Image (cartoon, rainbow, N blue to C red):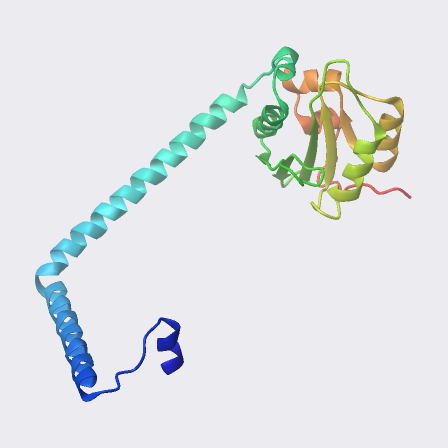
Length: 222
């Protein structure tokens, strides 16, 4: 007890006067506590009941607003279409959020996770049909090309770090020939400018675009 008091800068009463003062304080606190309990048992019950009712009504209203907002967002996303020109005009972070919204449009629960030190994952989707989808976004100039190094990095982190069932690299540019060949061999999907147009503009879902098997695991090299 003394150690706990010292931790808060206090010490036990030492003199008779200090002990009397401490006893008085304890009696006052107990008196207030008893009065408070009596008030709750008599006049306070209706007040507490009213407060509980108001809190319940507020919680129900908040829940309704949240569901209504989520339903409205799902309706908006269901018809989401993004042109290549819109995607080209975005910055890196906006591009990541756009890919997240496209996954949500496809009925896949997704969140944007990209930040410094994200270990080659900008968007992560989860769906009982396709498993865990990890997306690395590479926003570049229209003529820009993504090389094999990016796919090496995704291969090294998608499964071990992010527990991916499906790993995808998406760019508004293109991939080098070596990058596409390496991705095909090692099970890293790639979405180039033309495939992105079909996904974002035409409304083809990502699983359909990539021809994903249901609950397919991330393939590894033999």
